[in-house]
Length: 263
Length: 376
Image 1 (cartoon, rainbow over the protein chains, first blue to last red):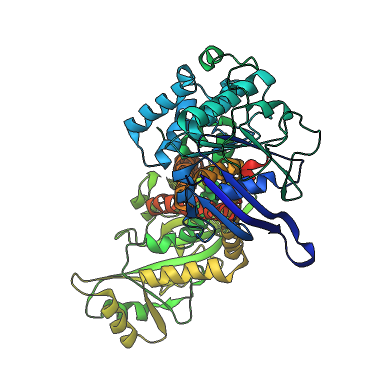
Image 2: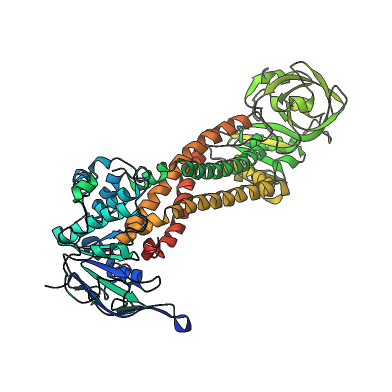
């Protein structure tokens, strides 16, 4: 089966000539449908650059990126928004909800961008908010929601149009631990039950257990798990490996069922 | 769902008030400055425009209303005898000195018209009657200048150029562009008042009405070819010449014009800054939309819609305030005019200013790096 995202020999350099700063220096990576892949690394290692390129919002300097088998590096600026709309949902660290719109309208807006309108968009938004157990917050403004609720609304928005890929940038960074776990559970459910490819960029080693696979990046290169840094995940750092087992398949880490957590 | 532009605008009430205040201030500033310019411009030629004449026959070389020179009665009869002339009236304009009860003196402009035909008479007379000026020494002044001329009411006696004069009526809203108020009287009375008094067989202007069916342009050429040492202008021509003189060749007019242009520039800058700031406030949201896959066209639509809503709301408030200011100015020394074409034109100005300002921020948007949304 083709990977949802296939990256080969990816390079990205910012600036030119003597001021050139290489951010990615030849990255190979496959992301598969049905897996949660953590992308970890120190600040400035190239995580967000890689995420931006995989999300078709930044053009690489070299190499290739295929989204659901379609090569995107050769596409023009006019075509990339369409690829994003059809294939990719984003979850941002700062939620990036529109403060002037209610939770439901935030999701409606994403659906409208994808061609749904009026009643259809409202119905779709309600269903997506139900999926993240926030149907009752349809009419609430972001300012009236907790951090965890905002991120769940953002996830519902990312799911608008049923994209095959979810890219999340530090989705738990602005949340307390409990809210963060709820959000990650949700992302894991989206991968495992709905077959989406989920890429999570994070600094937070506490969430390693949610990943099917963890990829480490340092100085623009994929590296093996730095020795001893993250016990228990060593060996999952092979970037082009297929989906791994879930970190907690039997619920041994003590997660409560989603419904119970969201209620 | 309501449009994102509208929701963005009305969600942050403080921002909305700031935006609208900026637009309203800018539009009112432009209306007041251009209204003043229009007011001054029309004031310079008011007597010509309200004269009711088709043609003005003036001494050769006279280029604007306020510096007429004597024309002999012979030329008046030559004009009157020209085929196509239905009526010709003598008309006096001249500067004079008005002496108040308290002894203070004020410069005035005396206007002497034919009280029988009323060609060149004051308009909008609100107290007394125009025909009252047929009486010896009778004059009509404007209400605006009661205080300046030291007059309380009808019947008061004053002195003009050393001769007796009596106020028999008041007009309303007849301003003078110079500091010398107009004082209307009969042609006969007016001969004595000006600093340079006229002989009974002289006039300053000859105001001509064409016979029905005779074009003023044709009659103008006919008079010009028959009467020597005079210039003949249609009312519109003489009006434009007078306006041009005061507004473009004197410092006074240029000052008003420069103020109007400065008002426009300041207004445009204020609006541009306001709309730009409003757009920049939502830059992160636009970045998010762009990252989500919204096309540039969609983002432009949101921003332009926001600008149009701001323009319409700002315009409505600005016009209400402007009309109030215009109303207040009607009893003051400087007229601010807001004719309907200007009311409509200001809507266009508001739209163009707001949308143009939005286009500047759109330029910023096209350079927006969608990856900014990943930066915490």
